[in-house]
Image 1 (cartoon, rainbow, N blue to C red):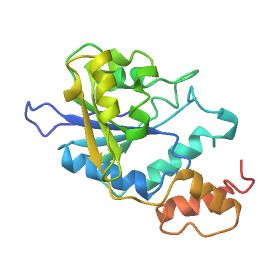
Image 2 (image 1 turned 135 degrees about the vertical axis):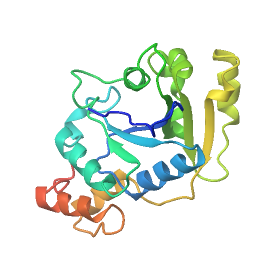
Image 3 (image 1 turned 60 degrees about the vertical axis):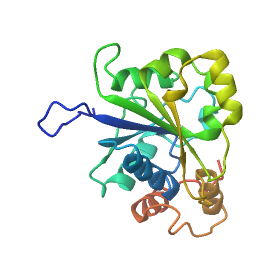
Image 4 (image 1 turned 30 degrees about the vertical axis):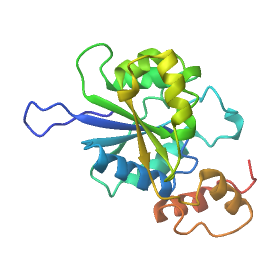
Amino acid sequence: MFFFRNNGDNAKLNVGLMGGTFDPIHMGHLVTAEEARQQFDLDYVVFVPTGTPPHKETGKISLPEHRYLMTSLAVMSNPYFFVSTVEINSEGPTYTIDTVRHFSCGEREGPGVFFITGADAILDIFTWKEYEKLLSLCTFIAVSRPGYSLDRFWDILDRNCPGMKHKVHLLEIPALAVSSTYIRERVTLGKTIKYLTPEPVEQFIKKHGLYLSGE
């Protein structure tokens, strides 16, 4: 379980949540989290590996414990990064609204929660469970490459949730040609993944023979 710590004053904490399968976690995830932490003055960033994602074929995802351990290995050198098992420990499909409620202390006064996600994913937020409640409980950081436009999203947001534009912010990150899919494909083909993911994660993948079958 993740426990919030403050600096001894009464200031409200700002906590970033970064969800994903992290299969495996890679440098792009870490660069994004650190940039979000600095630009939005976050006290912590909590990585939340998914348990049973509602929109993915679970048979093609690595074991939850493997994804949790890889994520833990990747963030252990950063004192502002933590990993939560809240979704992994949940039974059945996990939804963003439940995770955000957990960290925002439900309806009670809790830390300021910032949910970090891709700009492409934010375009689908209107299909997410209880999306209106989500926007009231947290602020979204939509990560994109420089030059990416959310104009279409703002129009839809205005129609569905008037007055909520201040709850979504765009964060531009220089393009990094790396993804979890790309790393899995390289492992399957016997190619190196050095510098695409932290070295402890690379060694974990080798030790446990992950992604060798291409599944």
